[in-house]
Length: 65
Image (cartoon, rainbow, N blue to C red):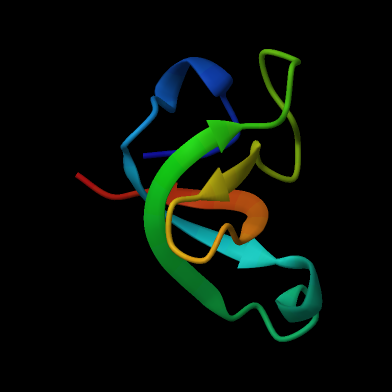
């Protein structure tokens, strides 16, 4: 599922994000959403979230179901 719409993302959802340091390589990091940091209903680069795992912050590329 697409990670560009805030309504698709809930706390605890398993997602793949791209960290700021990995934007050029496109390496994805998998984890569970701890906080949703983007306030707008959608974002062209993905909704920014914080993961429960090591409090990593990045933009959601894919929602895992």
